[in-house]
Length: 134
Figure 1 (cartoon, rainbow, N blue to C red):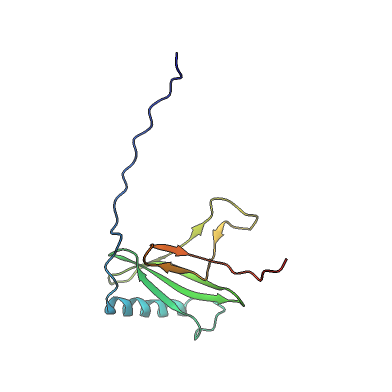
Figure 2: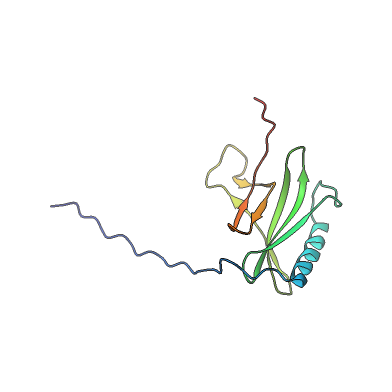
């Protein structure tokens, strides 16, 4: 008899999220930037507070991505990121990216270096720049 292979399981449905969220209003942007500046005061970052940057962008109609530059070297800036509610009272949770493997480091958590969020492709990009010396 032919090999008995069970049928493939049914695919799970994924909820469709609005691919183009409503842009942040001026009031929302200002509230989120104020929240980021307040949040920045409690961070342990080596970057001079005057050089820190807060960036916010809409992720969904009810959530935003907030990134704050925290550490800087010759080629790289390390950012910290949070998912923040767009409605008051603002609440946030840190973004933690973990690699599915351990590359010999103490942790498999990925640092956000020179992070940007591409609003068109909806991708969070991180890029560590090296010196190029062998």
